[in-house]
Image (cartoon, rainbow, N blue to C red; front, side):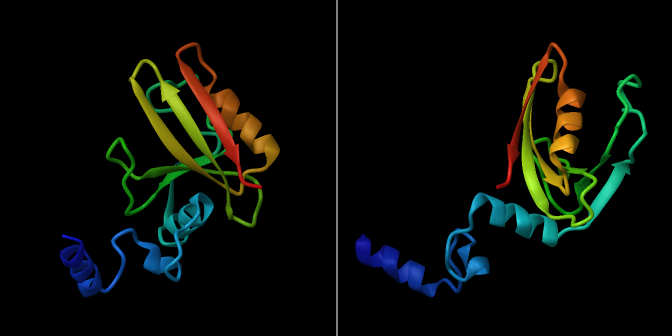
Length: 137
């Protein structure tokens, strides 16, 4: 059994875990997010100042969109908040829990300052949702 598994591994041109993209080393969480963002176009479908399509009282104070050509748990592109830092690097991630929709999602923060993160937290602060921001250090 051991011999057969090693023969199968030797026939592969790349490791199955995708680590070849990182020189054979496993990617960190932040490196993986950097790679996702670098390899996709950010589509802003809800620009700053626009209203949420289902809840008009919610106004987007920052640009919000998705990574074209990616897939999130909801089957759509991975969501992205774009903050005020012009460097446009991955600065964090956001985990949301929506008890009405009964789902949880990960959203990528690009160019988000501490102030931008506070704005985003307020956007999700409702009685039936929870949010946690992970800031890159």
